[in-house]
Amino acid sequence: MTMHTFILAAAFTLFSSLAWSQDPALGQWYTVDDENGEIKSLVTLSQAEDGTMVGVITKILKKDAGSGLCEKCDGKMKDQPIEGMQFIWGVSNTAEGQWEEGKLLDPESGTVYSGNITLADDPNKLEVRGYVGFSLFGRSQTWQRVENSDI
Image 1 (cartoon, one colour):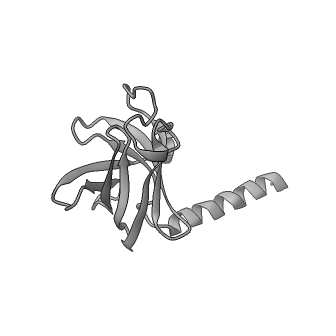
Image 2 (tube, rainbow, N blue to C red):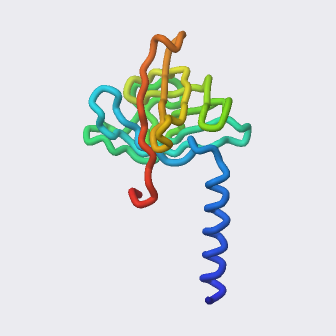
C-alpha cells in the first residue's frame, strides 16, 4: 500500500466515522413536492457552529425551475441564485432526529415559514413541516434520503 493510498483510506475512515456520529437527520436529501410528488431539489442539511441546523439547496432538479433566481424573496435573498442558497436556518435539536422552531424559506413563493424537521420511522424519510403562526396552518413534505450511489 502506497503512502497516498494509506492517507486516502485513513481520511475515508475518519470521514465515515464522523458522518455516523452525527444526527441522522443531517446529510443530503431530495425535496419532494407535497402537491405532485415530484423531486424538486437536492439539499444538504448540516449543523452550524451554534448547534442549530442549516440547509442549503445544493442542486435544483425540478424540470421547470424558471430563472433559477429567488425572484419572490425579500431582502438580501431577492434575485439571488437558488442553487447554493441557505434556505433553512436556526432549527434547534430537541432529540436525535428531531429539530424544531427554525425558519424555512420556500424560494418559489418567497415565504419564510417557521418549521420543524423530524426523521420518520423509516430513516430514509424526513418529515418537514412549515407553518405561519400555528403548526396547524401550514404545509408538510416528506423528503427522501440521498443514497451515496445516487450522486
